[in-house]
Amino acid sequence: MGMTMAEKILARGAGKEKVSPGELIMARVDMALGNDITAPVAINEFKKIGVEKVFDRERIALIPDHFTPNKDIASARQSKILREFAREQEIVHYYEVGRMGVEHALMPELGLALPGEIIVGADSHTCTYGALGAFATGIGSTDLAAVMALGELWFKVPPTIKITYKGKLPPYVGGKDLILYTIGQIGVDGARYKAIEFAGPAIDELSLEGRLTMSNMAIEAGGKAGLMAPDEKTLAYLAERAARPFNSVYPDKDASYEKEITFDVSKLEPQVAFPHSPENSRPVSEASHIEVDQVFIGSCTNGRLEDLEQAASILRGHKVHPRVRLIIIPATQEVYRQAMEKGLLDIFLAAEAAISTPTCGPCLGGHMGILAEGEVGLATSNRNFVGRMGHPKSQLYLSSPAVAAASAITGRITHPREIVS
Amino acid sequence: MIIKGKIWRFGDDIDTDAIIPARCLHTSDMAELARHVMEDADPSFPGKVKAGDIIVAGKNFGCGSSREHAPLALKGAGIACIIADSFARIFYRNAINIGLPILESPQAARALEKKQEVEVNLQEGTIKDLKSGRVFQAAPFPPSMQDIIKAGGLVNYVRKRVKQG
Image 1 (cartoon, rainbow over the protein chains, first blue to last red):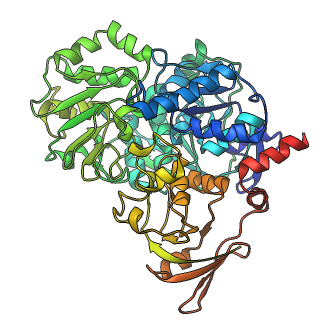
Image 2 (image 1 turned 30 degrees about the vertical axis):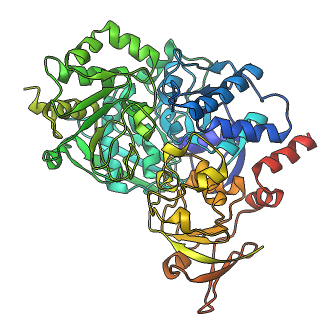
Image 3 (image 1 turned 135 degrees about the horizontal axis):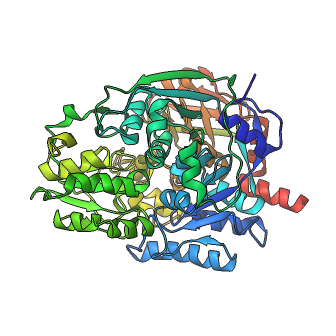
């Protein structure tokens, strides 16, 4: 019996010929990361362990992105802990404000997440790198402390669910719509403790950006990882970026899956997740009566260049509805620069959108666009739990950048084809 | 270890934003986090919860973010144990790593009600309803996890390993 991608990568990391679901292993970690919320706790725990130095200063990334540029004194104190630890340990991949990005957009951009690798991060959306063929998963701060000391961590080998997407993608349907639809079908615990392998012609058709969006939200179905086999697009994306040599891993033909699901996406509409769960996804046509106060385009889910290009293609020549605030946050400095060079920022400014420096900001209700009681938001981010973007009595909907841009123009949740026709 | 306490009930898919909202994550101080624990799910909870109380919840408790502040806030509020139908993966790891006892028992999660008193035996994984005398069996921890628990959490476990070389 063969192995799935997750099993093969974990077997390699554990130095074993074969591993099976349920098996507990110790595996070497290729890259570990933390941010300004989770790393301070990890650093505190690391200091209790009693080792002088981290296991490898080139394999740890510390990225202050959640409450940065720091919104208040308490968050500035958190960032300072990161900064001082990075200096003291001579951490190579520390990215300061002005050089940083939202961690899960920045890591792939810098070629720090590679096929066949095991990557752990003290942030649940670490699963993003599955789109590049890595086994990447979220851990807690104490886990991160242990990894920083040892360079390895215990894992329970997860069973794998294979999801195949058949059919050609309709216009304005992309990675965000596929993953919202998937979570709607399998639920927020549909892949709890499990790895997902995403496959099929619709995945092949997606750009790397769209694939990263899908893997990013594997955790919203409870998934431990959301993997995609590397293809020519993956290798082309990594050709100029890969920070290390890597060995791609592919699933065996006779791999054993706990479950196999197939979705035909040829007639799928753009999807919108209703409050207060990503599993409440419905076709955009069922949301057209919802009026919005604020639209946010950005985050580790949808703050990459393709996302901003999509938004700009819809916003071009239009203005944001007088009742609506549109906040656009390029996910990294590089995305910001390219958006400027391609003229996207001009389009956003002409449309009367607010543009911010890279930050997670409003996605987690941190800063840069918090909702008041009773307000309705539409965001391209990944979670719409109660109070996620502000007041517990605010309402948050999730969608793709195309739907978000169209909705900012009309003031209600809108299919992009209503604007571009 | 035997834990005896009064139950607080919560439903399915209690996410980490409900356990401790992101607006409180500018600190990792347990006592400060505890002042806001579960407030978006039940605003009266932080004021009423007492040291030694037990949470019983439905499926997928702790879903969402990886913030260790979630189990820290619960521990800081004095929660002695959490019993659920199931836990989200990262929350499960985090709770073990910081030494917050958690037990998975779908039967207990279905049967137990608010304010009931239970006695939990962590070694044996048993949960006893003190009123009816009914006993529920939770899944035992795998041996490698018992090592971490016995060492008093992951940091102590790693410290021991580092010393051994």
